[in-house]
Amino acid sequence: MTTITHPASPPAAAVQQRVGPLDAVRHTLTLAWRSLVQIRHNPMELGDLSLQPLMFVALFAYVFGGAIAGSPKAFLQFGLAGIICQNALFLTMNTGVAVNNDITKGVFDRFRSLPIARSAPLAGRIAADVVRQVWSMAILLGVGTLLGFRVLTNPVSVLGAVLLLLVFTCAFSWLPVLVAMLVDEPEKVMMLGFVVVFPLTFASSAFVPVSTMPGWMQAWVAVNPATLLVDAVRGLLVGGAVAAPALGALAWAAAIGAVCAPLALRAFRRRS
Amino acid sequence: MDNTIEAHGLVKRFGATTALDGVDLAARTGTVLAVLGPNGAGKTTAVRILATLLQPDEGRALVGGYDVVAQAQQVRRLIALTGQYAAVDESLTGVENLLMLGRLLGQSRAAARRRAAELLEQFSLADAGGRAVKTYSGGMRRRLDLAASLVGRPRVLYLDEPTTGLDPRARSDLWEVIRDLTGDGVTVLLTTQYMEEADQLADDVVVIDRGRVVAVGTPDQLKAQVGRQVLRVSPVSAADVPAVARVVTDLSGVAPEVTRDAVSAQVSDPGLPPAVLQRLTDADVAVAELSLRKPSLDEVFFALTGHHTDDNDDWSAVA
Image 1 (cartoon, rainbow over the protein chains, first blue to last red):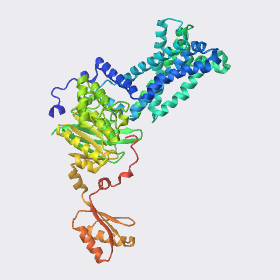
Image 2 (tube, chains in turn red, green):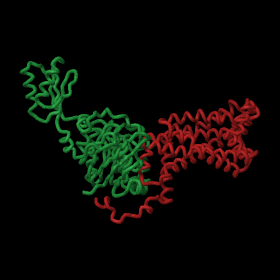
Image 3 (cartoon, rainbow over the protein chains, first blue to last red):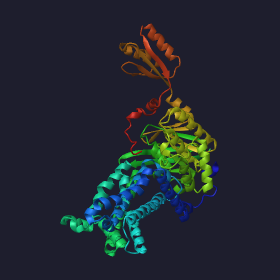
C-alpha cells in the first residue's frame, strides 16, 4: 500500500484541487435527481406540491370569491396571481426543511466528505426547487383556467411571470435556509411559514384591493415585497403596470439574498 | 510499515472550549486504529478534521500523504466516513441511496447499479433495497450507512462510534465486516467508548481525554499498563466493611476504594482472593460477594487519567 502513502508522482495540487465545471454540473444533476426522487416516496410532499395549490384555488374562488369580487370567476381574474405568489413563497419553506434535515441527519457531512463540487449540494437543491416551483405554478394556472381564469397578455409575459417568481423565490429561500441553520428541528422551519409568509402575503395586494384596507396598513402594503411581487405577476398575467413593481420585487429579492445568504453560510460554518 | 493517517499537534477550539489540545496519532496502512475515550473527549472532532469537515486551529494531518487542509479534495478521494448516526436519505430507497453516491463518485449508471446490488447483498439488505429507508430498523440503517461508505471502495474508512446503540448480534456482524476490510488493505480509524470494541478490532489504540492523548499502544500493552484486575469484596453485614478494608489493604498493599457495603481494589496477584477469603473466614467475617474482574473502561480511565469518565464536562454538543 505504499502507493497510497507516497503517491508515485504527486499530482500538482492546484490541478486536482478543483472540480471541473462538467463534473460540477453532473454532481448538481445527480443531487437534483435525488431531491426529486424523494417526492415519489413522500406522499406528503406530493400533496404540498399539487393538492394544496388546488385546494387554495378552489377555496378562495368559491368561498371568498363571491364576497370579494362578486363571482368566483371575477375573483380569480384578480386573485390567482396572489395565490400563485403565496404558494411559491410557502414552497421555499420546504427548502429550509430539507436543508435542516440533511444537516441534522448527517447527510450533509457525507456530501462534504466526498470529492465533489462544494456547491453541488446546494445547487442541486436549487435546481430541484425550480422544477417543484414550475410544477406547482403550472397546476395553479391550469386549475385556475379550468375555473374561468384567462390570461389577457401573451405567452412571453407568462414566461416572464414564471421567471420573476423563480428569481424571487431563489433569493427568498435564503431566509428559510438561514433559519434551518439556526434551529435543531425541521418543524421549527415550518413555523417560519406561519409567522412570516402568512402576514406577508395576506397583508398585501394578493387577495383584495388595497383601497379597502385602513390607511396605516396601506402604507405597509405599498412597500411589502409580496405586494410588489403580486402586482408584477398580475401585470404580466392579466395586464397592468409591470416595470415598477417588478423592479421593486427584484430589489427586495436582492436585499433578502444579500443579507440572509452570508448569514446562512456563516451559521453553517459555525455549526459544523 | 507506513502510516496512512498521521496527525501532529492538532488543536481545535470552539469559542472558550478547547476540544483538541495537541493530539498526535498515527494509523499504519491496513490496520485498525481505535480512538478510545468518553463522550466529549474530542474523538469526533479529531475524526471531522481527518475527514476534511473541520479545519484545525493548529497542527497538521496527512491522510495517504495528502494534507487534510491544503489537499482536501485529494484526501476526499481516499476516505469515507460513517458517523454516529446513519447518514442516509430516509426518503430514498436503499438502492437509490447507493446509486446516488455511485453517480457522485463518477461511476457509470451500470457500474453504480452493479456496485449497489453487490453491497446490498453483502450487508443482507438485498430484499429491503427497494424500500424507502424510513421503513428500515436501526440496525438496517447502520448497515446501509456503512454500505454507503464503501460505494467508492475507499482506502481509508472513518467509523465514528459505529456500534453505539446496536444490539450485540449486529455489533459482532459489523466487527466482522471491519476485519474483512482491513484484510483488503483498507485503513480504519474507529472511535469508540467501549474497551471491548477496541480490544476486538484494534491493532493500535489511542486513548484521549479532554482533548489530550493520555495513552498509546496495542490493546495488550494498554491493559498491561492499566494493569491489574479489580477485586471486590462485600461482607454480609455492612458493619464488617472496615474489617474487610483492613484485610484487603494488608494483603494487597494498596489503598482500596471503600463504599457503604463493599471494598474494591486493583490487584495483580492471582493468589490474593483466596488469601483474603481465608483471612476473613478466620476473623469470622461472613462474605456475601468476592469477585475478580477485568477493569472496565471507567477504571482504565481512572488509572490513566486519575478521574472518572463522567467527570468530563459535557462537550458532546460541540465535539
